[in-house]
Amino acid sequence: MNSQTGSDAQGVLSPHFDIVSNSLTRCEAKVARVFVQNANECADLTVREMSRMAHVSPPTVLRFFRKIGYGGFADFKSRFSNGNL
View 1 (cartoon, rainbow, N blue to C red):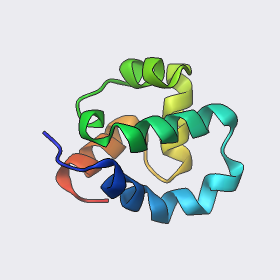
View 2 (cartoon, helix red, strand yellow):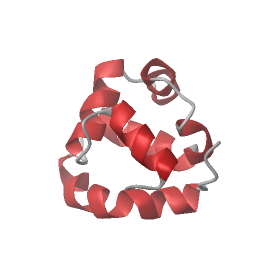
View 3 (spheres, rainbow, N blue to C red):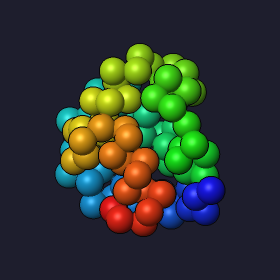
View 4 (spheres, rainbow, N blue to C red):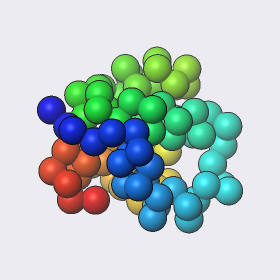
């Protein structure tokens, strides 16, 4: 289980998020908020679960993680869980 806190999650996202934050859609910003607020659970979520939490579609979750520089949600989860961000 991932031990990152919401505060740690903000630090993890910062290098990527700061670059694209002005170009996020309203729905992509919802995904970012869900991640920051629920970092401990994110490593165990599916795209569908995260999309439900953010009240967005699964493709929006994928677009968000691609926009911040990852191959998609699975790539992000793998790197986040392994501390390779």
